[in-house]
Image (cartoon, rainbow, N blue to C red; front, side, top):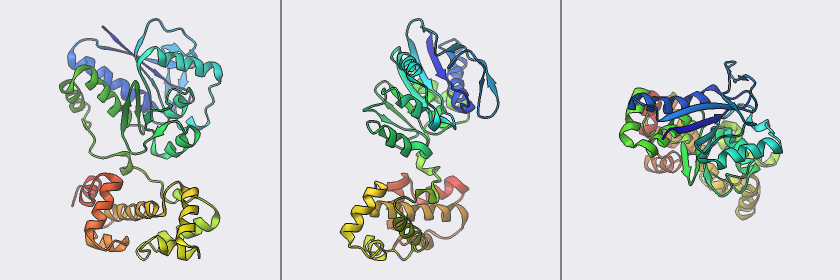
Length: 321
């Protein structure tokens, strides 16, 4: 039986969020030599959709249309403007109806911000682009956001992280339908990983945008980042603000939603990442520069934060050890 795949693309949608997953399903047809999937693009209406790159897409159907029968999968593509979209009650109801008609439904990239407004993500584990994961969690506290995963399959819900990860998600869906061998053949043909060796944390570049809280807390964060090799513990952060460790920890956690120790480790690893990417410093030198007393402690922090070792990380980005 032909599997119907529909992708909703809003004005300004990112082309790769649409074409990436659909090309994976099309490649499945090519690998098997027969039609397994029929892919279609849906718009808010029948008007031509201008994507973020300026490429125009003529939708096959409209969100206003009544879908005949059930769908296999319904995906919402992301858009650079997704944070500002407001579909309105009627369109949201139509979107929810499309999802309920589908065996699987979900989003690619920032499409999660649009889909979450229907309430159909509540209680589920999801992922989205690292740059909007915090916004998604803030707007929809009942959604369980995991910012590191490339894709997540939870019940009927399928979500992909940033942009190209839509291909990874579609490949996983093909594996669910047609098995590992077909999915591996598609990955080979499209010159992509069958399973990516890294999470989304490898690509995050939040940098100083991670500063948060009142001005005195932000000043402390800037100071700590500038002196990361000298800040040995949370007490040093508290002392800089002339607060008790207990009071400082409470204020910090309220403002940033992480503990000072977690934040400090994230900043140490962030600096180590930049040094691994841009210098030939030995791991021991990098550990010292980031405030770690040994390479082993740096390695354990990398495994916690990025699920890889410093050596693996450098090889991934530079092709050398």
